Image (tube, rainbow, N blue to C red):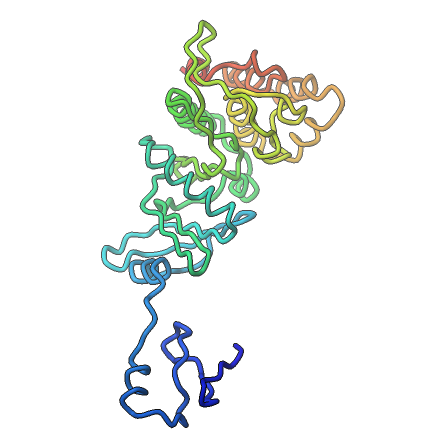
Amino acid sequence: MKSLKTNNSQERVPSEDGFGIDILGLNSKRSPKITSKLTKKRAKPQKGLSEIHKTYEIGETIGFGTYSLVKLATNKKTGEKVAIKICRRENSREMAKKEFEILKSLRQSTIIQPKDFIENEAENESYLILEYFEGMTLDRYVKEHGPLEEKDTEKVATALAECISYLHSNGIAHRDLKPENVLINEDKEIKLIDFNISKKGRKKLVETKRVTKFSKIFYTQISSPLYAAPEIRSKKLYTESIDIWGFGVIIFTCLFGRIEDFAELYNSAKSFKRIEDYIISEEISSLSLQRLLIDCLNEDQDLRPTAAELSAYLN
């Protein structure tokens, strides 16, 4: 910190209160009364910073993204564990705020629930406080434990299908469905997370039963390249059907546990024929689950099932 000089050439030094306020040095020739008053001055607490630490005991890092990290924390008063998403860049802070607003409007058991949103403008940080779900991301789970059994895959598929149907019926597309955004525990219960690029669209009541329709959305803003639906890769306008594609990728991961295989198939020539052949060759005992996976990974977004139709495959 650069030194500041008074009119009497007395050096100011940082206070010891942690707020960075300068007080007069010990050698100041000012009167004791003035010095005392200045010494007693304290900066106003940084609202976001003090509020977050006043309420929560911040613990270990349990996750991270491109522009944020997630910490485990405990409410000092109630003892409740929460997950705190800390965002530092301006665009990620705005996205976190939008994510909070979207999550506040949703009440569904498979969707992670928001607790609070705190902004700390002094530190250019935002804190999104979320329900804590004890588990791990699906991609990590299959890497450590291998693919799920078919009955467990059906359990995950049913819960996720109900979740997507709920979202679409409320005019919301998640737009980034992938194994990394699904938390799973030992009981194969799941939570859908990361709504930071979710989009609320216009409801469209037409005979095709499409619930929402999007237009003029920048393809570069959504989805991870590995999992991006074909219409995103080809820079076309898209519908909420990108979530159905993401659902298919998640079920593929559950069944086979080899996302690298999917990436290789997807990036190859005649990729969609190869994906279908691969699924058939794996001899899934549940033909309805096999058909569901093939239909969700259809190259043509208009031929994929709607969210409302997913449950028919699983019942």
